Amino acid sequence: MKIFSKHAAVTLFDNILWTVAVALLLCFLPSSRAAAELVPKAIVFFGQGYEHSAGLLERSSLEAQHEKTNTALWPGLDLQLMIRALEHYQRIALQGGWPAIAPGRVMKRGFRDRRIPLLRWRLRLTGDLGSMAEQNSDLYDASLERAVKIFQMRHGLEADGVVGPATLKALNVPVEKRIEQIGLNLERLRSFLSRRRPRFLLVNSASSELKVIEQDRSILEMKAVVGRPDRATPICQSVISYLEFNPYWYVPPTILREDILPAVEREPDYLKRHRLRVFEINGKYQQELDPDKIDWALFRSNMTFYKIRQDPGPWNALGRIKFIFPNRFGVYIHDTPARQLFNKSQRHFSSGCVRVERPVDLAEYLLRGDRRWTRSRILATINKVHRRVVRLPEPMPVFLVYWTAWMAVDGRVNFRDDIYGRDRLLARSRQNAEDYHASVQISCSIAAENSL
Image (cartoon, rainbow, N blue to C red; front, side):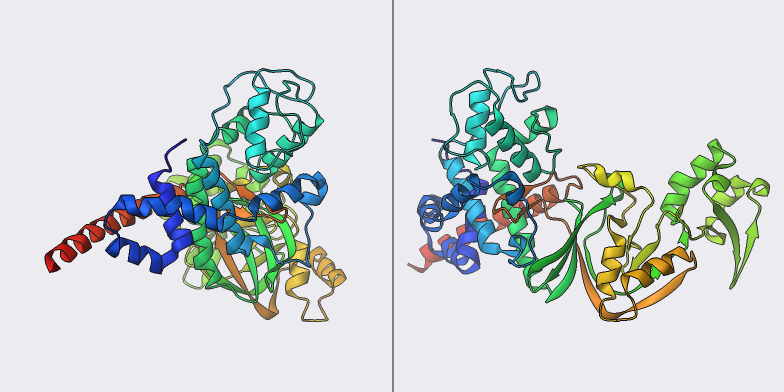
């Protein structure tokens, strides 16, 4: 049996015993070994129920498992479900975890491979493959393909039912790493639940998704394109108070410096082809300049005196609708002409802003308190290609979060890669806190001995 890891024990303290129990353990238990002895008992006590729910999921269809609903509470906000998922993965760790599946040829339906029995075992441990499925067969059959698709959807991979390099990599992430990931996101969820509103908009940059939540129910969901790793979408909280139809796009300094100017140097007609106009700023006045007559070296050294603007239209980088909320990062939510990006499973392509798949649906929802703004009027306003600012009848709280593990509507925990490296930073801070708690425990023990 694998020894229960040090980090898993800390996770259990953080997520089961919680703050009071941790304080008591630190100050009154005679040793860290005594604390560790509590771990298996806590797991058994709190671990009831998860396997039963997984069994129900095994009998449901693939479509039903991922069907969206606006009648049930969204599990992503259910702290207890996350704790049960943590306990389930901790039990797997106590039983030895799962071994790595060796690299080799792609595995797909109809193939035979000596690694397939191990694949079946791996998927059964996490509830992706039903307990009634064949255990030892080396044939990649329909039930195994279905289980692989479920696993792929839980991990944000293309659900093609084929075990290629990306799927194999996700399968081979150690259970201890998944325990740590769930624990880190439990901390994030706890913090968020104390700040959430009865009605809010939620963007998870780790999963590239947007949800509208009312009374803890997800009533509108859509894909999003978020910041690439070197231009990460920030974590922030704000309020959307107005939106713009047919917005202008003023090129941000980073994009201007790192993207636009190098493109202009390579292609002199770049600005004209992309309908970008250059303006010199003089106080409150702007004067348009002819790109062919600009000294670009001088421009680069005095960028604060110039703006590059893209006029409204289907070519505009912001699309036809922009949703504005004040924040220090200069990001916003908007439409996009690059619709093809929503077909990708990994959607980290922007410079930090959030592009949404269904901007008209989102605008219709946000304006629903004003009867004048019907869907037909929204579309008519867009088609006029003139900028128009519209205040919302009710401001909408918005949260940009980074959750790499959460509970989905099918009752299973979902994972995403730590594309921004924020899990690593949080884990490091937890380790520092663990070291501090250990030093406090030693101090408490010394003080107790001196008082005898």
